[in-house]
Length: 308
Image (tube, rainbow, N blue to C red; front, side, top):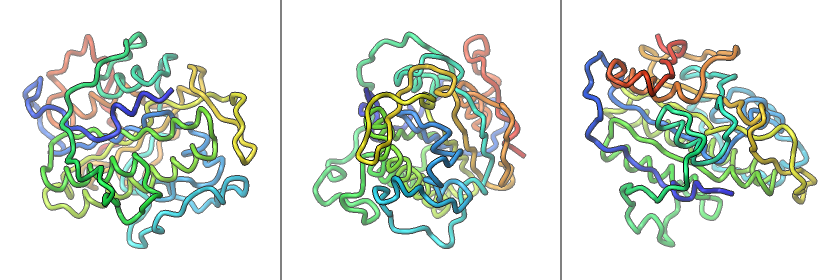
């Protein structure tokens, strides 16, 4: 089911732009964090099982008794780090506005700005590889040991790339929520781990000269998950959930974070606003080449509600 393993480590888009920047920039750096694998709004912003993402989302809702003992604690919350949503805009009714809730299609829409429901299985692209040391037995991101899944390892590696090279544009994929096809509790645990990883990414941005106050972070799932469960039950009696294109699997969220002079702070956009194909035009606007993208192909819009 999960094809996102091909993208389990971060990659940097080619440094040479397809379109030279002709417009005024809002910031010089953009990081796009994609929750590949599908996350339902029920378990994320809806907090149906409690606040599984306490570093990203405001609120102290307790994790439900049914799954709490299987949600791993991850070094606690940083007392000096507020919930990430306070640093920007949260679109609560964003959409992947297409019934092809398949991984390649979801990934393509997110990074190309075009819904492509018939994307064939593609050969792996030639992304820069990471040093072998990241895969060694000594690799222990943030001291988490065996609690670190591939999403945490991906994000840890991304923080190292960001702090050393300060790329203008980086896309990072996380994919372990796709275990939701077979184990609901593990799906919730991996959402919790992804929340931890994203908070460390944001912390790195804030602590790195040249990135702090000059970086916009965009976060979104590639798509959601079905309203109705499948027939697989985990050890806590929770049914697993697929993503086969129903309306619920098209409902997602989007978070846009950045410095106060660029991004509106601590706002929630509760109306049906924005969709996946708006992310590419928004990144183009931030980096100053929005006027040069082919509007006949990339039909999304700039997410202006999130910006000052």
